[in-house]
Length: 344
Ligand SMILES: [Zn+2]
Image 1 (cartoon, rainbow, N blue to C red):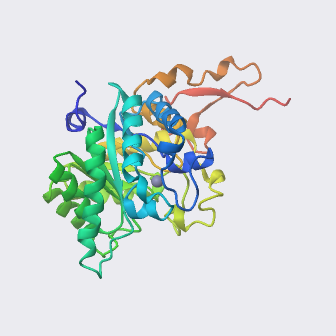
Image 2 (cartoon, rainbow, N blue to C red; image 1 turned 135 degrees about the horizontal axis):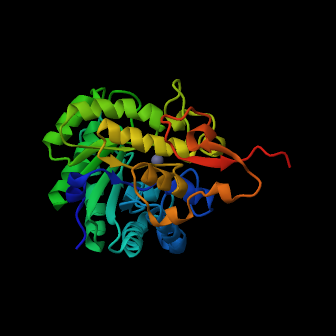
């Protein structure tokens, strides 16, 4: 029997995985624009491979790739009749890879159908969540993550649907600032969700670690419960803190990719801030997750191939990972790696 998510959180930080949709788009299996997850039925081997990479990098949880797999959103890409097939396949593949090594999170996200000016839209989004939850639960998940919410009310509908189905719930917002899209301060939103039974509350996507953690700190102070962070692996800016605002979004983000050192430093900082679920989102791939695992003192299977640069004949100078990323090392005993300045 696998330990459940709540038991694992009680024992210490849980390490999440990375981003699926943008990485599978880069690999040619997801279409930029709709960003829907039909890859689960069209190229299951591609999805399986990415799950395997995150598992090998040390992730405790694999998120089923059911992002944007609600009926209305799939319909915008011509897949409205495949809601069941896509949700089922995504959860099945995540379970096949996770085995007894990792937990599988069923995944729900904003539907784009919630309209605060239209009270009837609450029931519309609730039905979409109920439909996905029933399919994913039938296939078998350990808990659910509802992510990328901007409106508290849509997040509440998702939380209530998960709780009605009897599962632990992690709810995360993609934050434009210190308020929800309705203008509710995030600390207040956290207290409301905690009061309605959310087991983990936090932020995901949109922001890089540097611009997400200050908001997660506010959330941390608002609740004694579990808090989660899943920032992106691309660098954003103080004036444009969400990557969707950047001129590089979405097809020219490559040069903004954060280094593994930066993602490792994020994991360390998140743990120090009391973040319980330390994961990542778009742009964060296997080498980032491995660096996060190692920063948390773990040695996942992929660490068997972690750097041993002193065995490279052409490089001599020793630097820490942070120095390689252009930053001063935070501690004198940070591991040092040989690195190149020999003139060839
Ligand atoms: Zn993301």
